[in-house]
Image 1 (cartoon, rainbow, N blue to C red):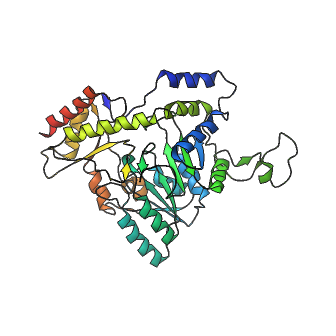
Image 2: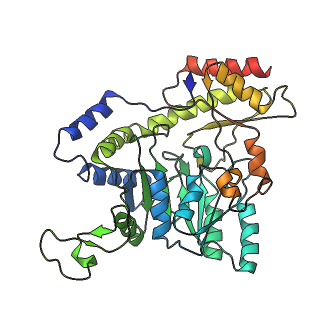
Length: 385
């Protein structure tokens, strides 16, 4: 089976982790702040907070921005459920904005229309989580303009996008957002086995997230309500969580980061090969905005149902039967049973639902070789021609 994505672990990665295993610190040692520093420098952001998953990063990002009971969080329906769940964790209410049919990202036009209506009803969101699906950044300049006009805060869920660029600047620099979140899950562009990171240019947001990732406990005398009783002293000053990243994970991340640009370049090369090889098939190939350089986490094709002789399900199952580990990113969040129990219905976001009925994620990862990619292409041609 050729998987849709997979990690690449080399001897340098193994050596980096073994070095930590043989050191004095397995967690809360020097590797985590070093990894944070390197990612912040790469992205040209002021601060970075490493955590144990991108979901954790989304959660503490929302809390740092003051999201709470009675507030609204808006996001896209085409994402993993964590982009919405993070609002519910904070006691907020969640709603969705339909996608752009060309980029599959949140539609700025749909967002503006929804904001106009929400302003009239007094139901504006406190936070909007935009998702850079497949690695292609959203229209961040327009979203930033809307955030200033309507007073909401912006989180970039860039779980798919590290190594990419928007308007020639690194994704993660937070020029158009308050906080950017990365994922280091094994199928992502670089991995720490599990892990995530939140980047920001605001010192107060960084400090809040650092506090929240470690139980709300501090040893900083300036943050304590009274003078320390001794060198052993600490105080819990907030309700936090155990969301820390280990030094083992950070060491792996530092090693992987050194190959990030090469990984993304190879993904672009593979995507271009797909673009050339799949022409003429009843498929809509990914469209890339000229202002962006995608992280290319996923290569999603859409079946042109009016031209194809097989259904979406038949094509997907035939590819799996041929040993091609295709996947579908994602089932619209508002169609999940949990969210339908919260009042959402099929038909609420038609562009997202049309996407779901046609989308297939083809294998794309840095170590996918040309022969394997040719096997994917030939299988598709055999099924669709």
